[in-house]
Image: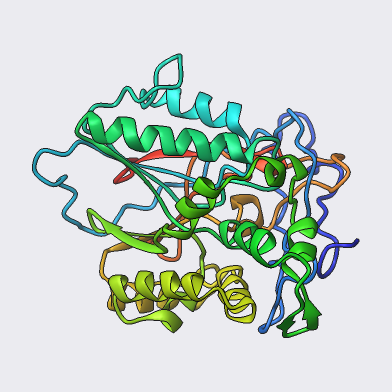
Length: 346
């Protein structure tokens, strides 16, 4: 089953310079374009085998944040965000422990800190249900310690909910008839996750919010303006998403999933204007999102068979005139599972 659109490959390696000469920096690959009315009846992104080889590239210059009130609410601690996890349970525990958020046993260790997951807990990686169980556990432990651990709705939560609820039920898509089951399998669905999925997991996912604002940061899963289709306030968007899932109409949930799967709205020349559209409606000084892996935003990826190289991801990617922060480090493609404290510092 081929990926949508042209193959996404890097050259075998960067060009080299003569001894003593400055290093040759290869030009970035051209952006990958998706059709305007893209619908995920084929794989959204290639499922690229992870390797331990990363290209050692200098980090991009840090873009100063717009001025914002970064003070935490009274009595609350620092704010952290986590990018897409996609079933990589061990890597998640390692990343959270490195920030002092959990202890060696995987228990909350951050007191009154605030932690937001940006969605996409399952698919592609080996233990999506283990990831959900950990997030649910940390939510209870953080609340007891005076902090909190919360999560947003990602497109893969919608995909898993749809695959469980509707299976092979035909739905109307822009490319003809499709089904949640087929889309789930094409986009990295894991049988072990489906086998371990229980009612309390489904209820938890269905209650997740889609948008939230914290300390001047507008938190969303996807780098799209499709949220504007669902309401003119954060509360309205979240209520509408919950209503769609409560009605449980296959075509309506599919349309929600399709729109939340759109990407790259903030990447090109008009990207900063797209970010401002969201900020003007929902508030905040910056959008923080997951969904589109940083290697894809930069136009550089490895190959589907694990050959070739990927871009080194050392931290969040700030772009769109400093108005957007990308948090999906590309854990499924030899990247990094990102955890960052907000606001970012240089």
